[in-house]
Image (cartoon, rainbow, N blue to C red; front, side, top):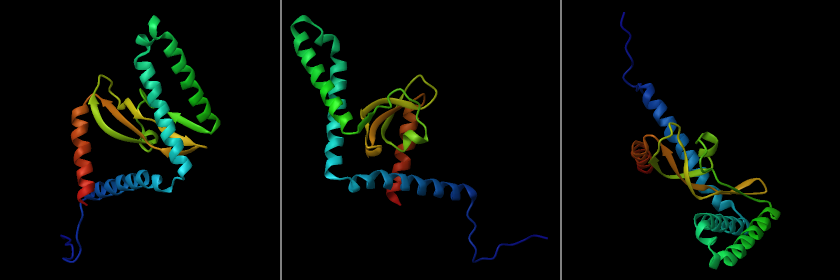
Length: 173
């Protein structure tokens, strides 16, 4: 005996159901990431910006450390490092934490704290943070700024295409 589905009932394949659930979850995460900034106090916004700039200063000093060790720049290098250390100490006293995920494998916990700007091909099998442009910033344990990163994966260009397609689907709906 063959069973028939009444005409007024629409059958949705399981793949579509799962896809819709994933889109909804991605949208919820996106809204959470975008909504947190609206709830921040002015002080938190200032703390976040100071922490981002301190992180940037740290990266510049690291990138040019060999050049700064040359005899004619040594005094400047020392002064910049002292200033850098004082900035980080002041942020720490204010209960501001800066988190750089560079090199770490990307898991669900990290994904909730980052905005992936793009993906690049890399030798490692596991998806990981290739570069951090802006760190996660926490104030008194609460996230006040989400990191901006580039992810690395063996199939970086494929991942970019998939992410772009997913973002476009979210925008269309």
